[in-house]
Structures are given as structure tokens and as C-alpha cells.
Image 1 (cartoon, rainbow, N blue to C red):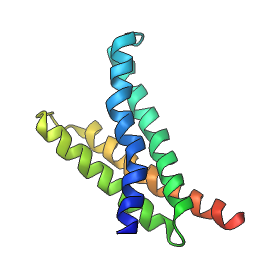
Image 2: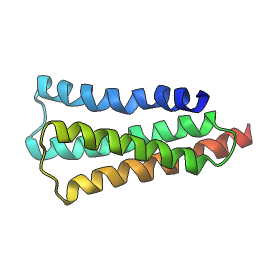
Image 3: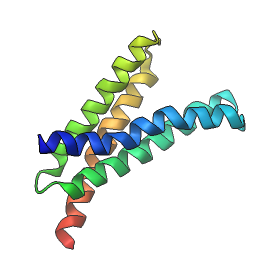
Length: 118
């Protein structure tokens, strides 16, 4: 139960980002359509890395497994959410989910290493 609460707390960051960042970009309308997708991909990678780092700092051992679990759970959540809006799936959608999984796993490995150093 404690691990579930830990994952839910860390998941708030990327989920909140996915809902708020496109809204901010849409309101500001500063970027074109093509750069909009690229910006979301870059920022989601950064947010996934940060979330993985946080989960790695909060875990005792095997940070890569916790990062992998976080990445998979976020990808499944975003996949189910996109099914509700009937999005079409292309190779860039698969790339988006893979970036989330890889970056959270890598971030958690960095986080567990930083925890051991201090």
C-alpha cells in the first residue's frame, strides 16, 4: 500500500503536465502546429526523467524496476485516456510511450545512484 501511494504521488507531476502544458500552449498560441508536438515530446521526456529521479530517490533498491513500473503505468494511463478521445495511433504515438518508459527508468537509476552517494 505504501508503494502505491508513492507511485500515485509521483504520477501527479507528469499527468498534471500532460493536461496543463497543452492548455498553456493553446492559450498563448506562440508555437506552430509542428513545433507543438515536438515541444510536448521534449518536455514529456524531461518530466518523465524528473519523475523517475524522484521515484528513484524514494526507493531503497532496484530503482530501475520502480522506474519501469512508473513508466509502464503512466503509458497505460495515457493510452487508456487517449482511447476515450479516439485518437489515431501512429509510430510517433509508440515513440511517445517508449520515451516515457525509457526516461522514467533511466531517471530512477540516476535517482537511486544519487541517494547512495549522499
